[in-house]
Each structure stands twice: as structure tokens, then as C-alpha cells.
Image (cartoon, rainbow, N blue to C red; front, top):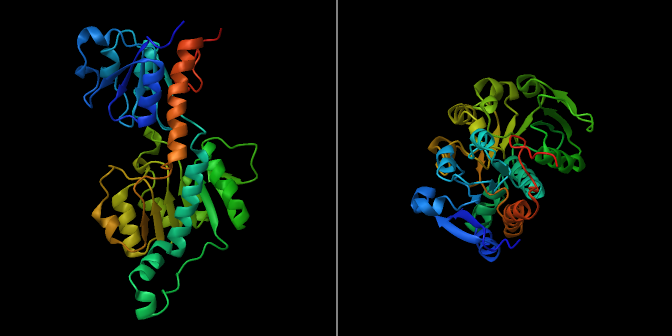
Length: 322
């Protein structure tokens, strides 16, 4: 069977490598940001596969495509894809796990160090000529040495973060619903209990109903005045008003954030505090990693139409045996 004639849909805003490879392998149809509505109705019925960009894929979009079989989503998180509706329609949804684990873990550790040692501010001090004019950059009030790190979420990326922190000689604990039997770290079922015991909290949990704004004033207060909070998971998990207040009034010492509740909007209250290190959601944003993610998106579609089996289906849309 030739896969070059299978109609596959992708957004005009998809990663360029996704579009390039889809064009080579499939009959690529492009949709505008309003989704399949931008296509003629007759053309929609031809679509059998789709590549979901960062904007996700809604139930309404799926229902415009009566013969859709598979949606290949770009990213580990796939909360923007209505997987419940996909499952009810028998549509397989895939994501891109593992490809970006190392990059996100590396960036998270770098963000932690930047937050504790204020390295971006030190570089700016040099660039502005202040080292020569005003003298040495002020001593950082915090150090990474001797910290007790609590990781909220110990999935693939959380585990990679923990492994990277071990050589720093840091004590590591974690909070998940179910303890793991393959790690030596102390497990907490309660985020509040862990926050009371650690002085550094790293959040790497996905966007779910259970994680909505769980990092709030109570958790930050438990973390304490020497506390450092780092978020490389989802901005959805943080009450940003509570966090800005905690940073401003000294409830915690510092925060490093790569994700925000309403991206790309960043609350001015977070921008204004000097003890926050802020990044524009770049944890996986390197050319090699994003190319790897793009390849897995396309490879999932190729494999599905070649063998009827996707490479990385999400748990909510399991493949049938046989």
C-alpha cells in the first residue's frame, strides 16, 4: 500500500519539519487556525489522519472529519486534545514522550541554578559595565548546596531531573499518588507534607483537574522563607497571585518559572519581583529536540497507516490487541 495518497491534515502553524515530512509521505492538506472548517466539506471527509500542533484538537474538529483514524500530537502533554471524545470515536491519539526528557530535565536544573545563584542578573551586571564601574556583583543570598529537593511528579521527566540532582549531593524526595518501587527517594502522598519537609519544590506535573492551582498560598507558606519553587510542568498548577505575593512578602525566597497559566501572558506582578527567574516556555526548545519531536509525530502516522499500530498511543486511546 502506498502511503503517499493518504490524506492527512495539519495546521499551517505546525513545526516546519512536520510539514516537510508529511508532504513527502502523505497527501498533505493544510488547515488554518480555525481548524477543519477552513476546508471544503467534501475534502474533510477524505481526511484519515491529523497532526495536532500546540493549539490541540477539539471535539468539534474531530466531528468535522468523519473518517479520521489517528491524531498525532506534538508534545508530551496532550491536554489540548479532547482525548475523551477521540476515544468515543475510536480515534487513536499519540504524543511524543521520551524525545524531550533530557532537554527538559537539563533546562529545569539550569533554571534551578539560575534561580538560586542569580546568574542571569550577574551576567547583566557584567554586560552593563557595572563590574568595572561599581565593583563585584553582590553575593547571592542562596546556595544550592545542602538543599532538600521535593519533586512534584516523578514520571519520565521528573525521574531524569532527580538523577541529575543526585551528583549535586542533594537530598531528594517526591510526591505522587502512588509510590515507585524503583527509586531510593522518600515518597509523600501529600504535597503539603512534602512542602513542609523540603526547602526546594520542583513541579513537573501535567495539566489535570487534580493539579489545578495546587501550588497555592498554603503550599508556599509550608515551603518557607528559605524556600525555592521551580515550575517546568504546567502553569495551570500554580496560583500565580499567591506566588507573586509569596515572592514579594518573603514567604518564599525565590522562584524559577518556565511555564505560566495564560501563556504568553505573564502577570506583571511576577515580572516585577527581583527574586523570580522567568523563561518563555523554552524547556524543550532546542532545534535537535524539536526536530526529534516532529519526527515522532510523523513516524506515528506512518506506522499507523503501514501496520495499524501507532508507536506512542496515549493511555486514554489504547490500541486493540491483534
